[in-house]
Length: 98
Figure 1 (tube, rainbow, N blue to C red):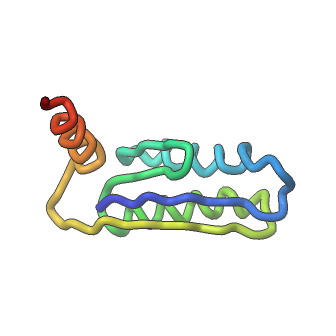
Figure 2 (figure 1 turned 45 degrees about the vertical axis):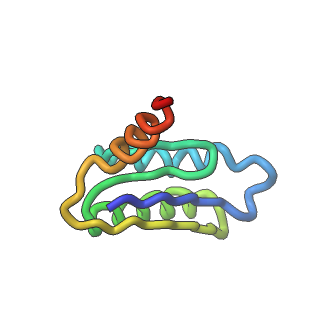
């Protein structure tokens, strides 16, 4: 499955980058395939392992913020692997054709 999520600390002032970086640090330490962009972090794996990482990321932010907002979108496709890169590669191939 793919899970795209965003963790937002609330009540820590205007700058949330340090707290968000801690969430991304958790994701990267998980060893699961992942990608971070300006809006979301996407991770790929089995349901239980992906959701455990999301919880750990939320917990990391909650350690420095009195409140946490979580946005999550999931693509549940049993048996599919490497969707994190394969989907983007397909679109790039289509766009490169005349």
